Every structure is written in C-alpha cells, then in structure tokens.
Length: 492
Image (cartoon, rainbow, N blue to C red; front, side, top):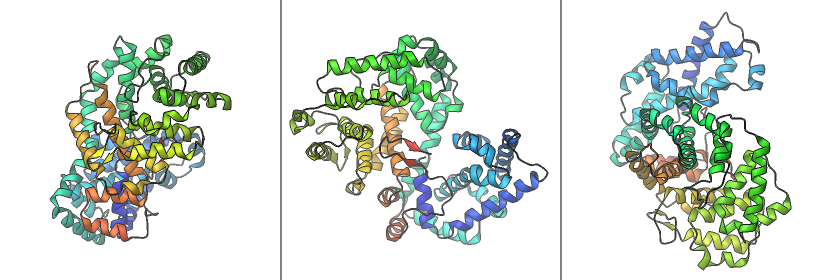
C-alpha cells in the first residue's frame, strides 16, 4: 500500500515501462501455459488448481533468485483469494494470471526496480532478469539514467532508501515479537488486552500480516467473555478507543460470530445513556460518538432520522473560536467526518469556524494536535484526510509533511515494546503514520504524487511529472487502491 505512489511515479517517469510489463507477461504466460498445458479449469477443481498455480509462480520467483520469505509474504496478500464469482467465471490459466497473479507479480518486480535505484543488493538479480528477457535494453538504459540522477542526489537517495525499508522493518519487528504479541491475548485485564491488540491488529492488517500471527486465544476470549468487553469506558479518545468497539472490530475481522441480539441491545442502551448524559454528544463526546457510529456500521444497526438528530444536536456556542481552540485537531476533523458520514449539511459558518481553527494548527514543522501543542501523526492524518474529503489538498502542497512522518515511524519503532506496560500512544502514532502514508499513495491526484516525488526523487523527476498531462498512467498494471472519501477506509 505504501509503494503505490512510488509505482505511479515510476510509471509516469519511465517512458519504456510498458516494455517491462510486456516482458514479464510473456515470461510468465509462456512458463505457465507450458507447465499446465494438460490441465483444464472448472468450478469444481479451481481451488485445488489455483493452489498449484500459485505454488508454481512462487517457485518461478525462487528460481530467478528472489528470497523465499520475501515472496511467501507477498503471496499472503488477501487480494490473491478467489471470490465466489471468480471461481465460476475463470476458466483458463491466462485469466487466472491476468485477474489474480499479474498485479502482484508486477509489484514484486517494481519493488526490485526501486531497490536497484538505491543499491539494495539486487545487482545479481537484475542481471538474471535481463538474461531471462524480463528487462529490455531500452528499459535498462532509461533505468540507468534515473539511477544516475538519484546517485547524484544523496539526500533524495537517503530518503528513498529509508522509505522503502519501512515495510521490511515492520515485518522484522513484528516477526521478532510474534510470541510476545500472541501472549498479549492472555492478559487478565480486558481493557489492556483488547485496546492493545486492537492497535497492533490495525498495523498488522495494514501490512497484511494477519496470517503470520495466531489469534486463537483472542478469538476464544471474544466468543466466551462478551459480558467482559461489551462495555464502554471513560475518557474515550482516538488513542484510547472504546472497549466494546475494539471487541466488535476484532470480531468482524477475525470472523467471529457473536450474539447479535446481545450486541444490538447494548448499542440501544448506549444510545439512551449517551443522549441523557451529554447536552451535545457531537462536541462533548466526539470520539465516543464516532466509535458508536462505527459500531452501528459494523453491526448494520441503522439509526432513524430522529436518533441521528438527537446525537448531533448542538448549539452555536460550541463553534466559537474560544471553544474550538481547546479541542484536538483530530476531534475537529472527526466532527466534520461525522457530518459527512451521516449526510448532514451544517451551516456554512460552522464548517468555516472548524476549518479556520484547523488551519491555525498547520505549521512549517508539521501539524499540531492543539493550536499551541505538539506535532503528531494523528493530527497529520486527520488534516490530510479532511483536505482530501474537501478537495483542498492543494493547500498542503508546500508543507514537507513526509519528513516528519518517516522520522516518527523510525523513532517509534526503536522504542516499541510489546507488553501490558507499553505506551499505547506509540502504537497509535505508528498506525496514524501508516494511514498518512496510505493517503499519500492511494489518493492518486497530482498533488499527492508530486508531494511524494518531491520528497523521494530529484527535481528532474518532479519536473517531468509536473509537466505531464497524465495524473496516473492508465496502463499501469499494478493495483490501484483507493480511499473512501467519507470513511477513510481502503477500497480494494
């Protein structure tokens, strides 16, 4: 997910990239059709054949010189799972290749191209790919020219190197602490257990590492102890997520069947308590309301218009500058996000007041969580998101946000501790750093692509992309994930 923007930059800059894609297609299709020439595909045998198909492709990569762990991790991607329609519609190996395997294969090769640009131990592999016919002479010449540009810009080369090593560092950190992560499932205190595992799972899910961790104990806990976690807690924030929401989120993503009647009864009671306790839940309990609405979505509990109005009723006194300046940046954005989720159109002066306060938090050094507070990844993510939601990303074009994001990722990974005593803020800040990178990569607008290019590549690359007519190269064959403008969720 954090490589998509890089791939877009390469596709826009390298004129001969299509020769690269064509050579890959030719190599794999020839080998696949030769190996499976006596095998036919139908809806009855496709699962078995598909496993053999993926194993064959993995073996091809290993014979090319790729590392086993690297390729096996890549083939854990949920994208490769066949859905019901594909099991019926796909009837040939060419279709399997085009619809399922080829985007992942392109991405694997494109990552090696980037590794080559920063000298990450790929020279022998590149020579082998050339000898196999996967790299055309025209493409190699153009790639060498780009590499020379990068070699002559050591600052950009260092930025690019650190950027592409983030994912491997995450893989290493979480693999090294696999036993510690799994032992967290046995913590006695439900609050520590669920909140910490929720944050860890969000990061694992971001990098699609779910299959590397055994979540059996937490599945048992969620199933057998629903009364312990189906509760709300005081002082809910985006760093301190509500306990019941953590449980519902993990249950959904771990495919756990819950007592739906009990869950819905709890959510109805929570609605009554929230509207009784707060005069204006939207601003007095913004984050709690946000988790409540996300929970209704998870459980498909659709609120009536009257219930929605009860949750968002708010007086003008809450939107004056003296009140808004005391709210967190993320809270200000979440208020606007809630309006959007509920399809509510507040008075323009309310929106203007919030936007004005948000703009006061944007500084040359980064985005602050309070007007006079500290810079945070959480604040950065929410300001990026609201700018995307409101089509105002242009306003952020001159701010070097990526330097701060990358620095915080490396700093937080150095002090990360997988235990009951860990600082939740570290995991939260890591998660929002990655979510920010998702926005830079998956919002495929010229502003975001140029923002990435400015941080990672020499000016010559930025100039060519800036002057080009294409925002995204339509023939680029890797995956183009999107971001939902209302929820911020990834669209696969």
